[in-house]
Image (cartoon, rainbow over all chains, first blue to last red; front, side, top):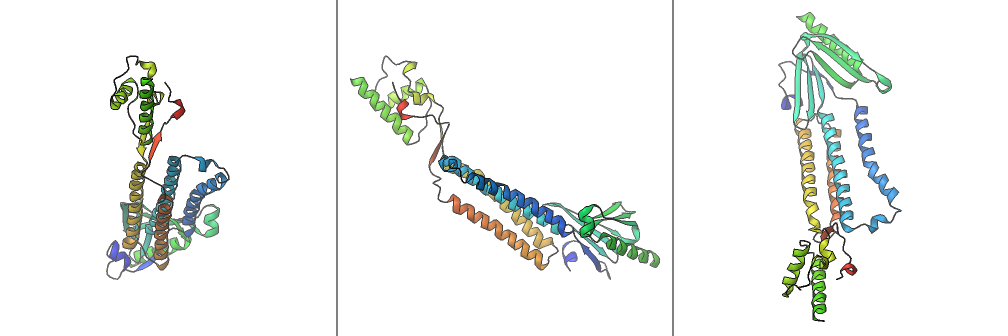
Amino acid sequence: MWIERNFLELEKGEKVVLSLRRHWLIFTKTILFHLILLGVPVALYFVAMPLTWFNDLAIFFQSFILLFASAYFLTICALFFSAWTNYQLDTWFVTNYRIIDINQQGLFHRLISWQRLERIQDVTSETKGFWGTFFHFGYVYAQTAGEKARFIFAQVPYPEEVAKKINLMTKNKNRNI
Amino acid sequence: MALRNKEKRLIDLVWYLHKIKISFPRGRVATKLVYQRLGISVPSSFNKKQRIPFLKNKYMSFPLYLILIPYAVFVFCLTMIVFFCFYHLLRFGFLTNLTVLASFFLIAIFALLVFISYKYLAPINWKQSIQLMENINPSSIIF
């Protein structure tokens, strides 16, 4: 299984109940931001195209502008790919035994933390803002008694249902104990 | 009359050096060096006022391909970032068909950008020299 192959071994009888990542709309914002960054020089080009000064520039400046434009577009592309990787690698899992938070904080910085369901004291969900309400995404906070006091499932889809499910599983777990 | 010919040869030499992009120090010493290069003695009337205007200017020349070096280093770093992102996605990503497709699509866009850059940059003659702070006008070479 993917989670076992990459991050941590599941216990005997442990099954992944929920696998979550940020809502797609959050990444849409990133896409729009990068599209705007891409669009600025394109717009500048179309504004400057009727002007003849570019053709009159010395070869050094023409080459420099071409190199700069190339580096700019490649940088935007690389940053977008990095954002896409971060989006893909930021994941939360709820198994029938525990919750697992895999947080990709940079290219070479990953934080993995987990907590057993019986140590979870309180689970709350929060949906705020127009977009959150309209597209049903928000935060789920799981208060624990462990070293990491609070697990935050950030901008996940249907936070109320996720909170309900974790609450239900925690109660069942505690009842069995 | 003989001095006039020498001066003419001097101007020709300076202009030739300028054409083959040889930059050299400016000022009186440089003017003397030009005279020595010509194999003629420095005229006794030589003084600061006789410096060649071209030699007085700041003059910096370098081959155009030098600006390709930082560009190449930068593009190499970006390529490494993309490579590591791709590796992380394949190694640690929660892969779905959409994830794999989108990742390959992004790689293809990056490769396409590199190709387009190459297409635009290849026709430029990178071996030619570029003069910065150039203030040369052949008609200004007067004595």
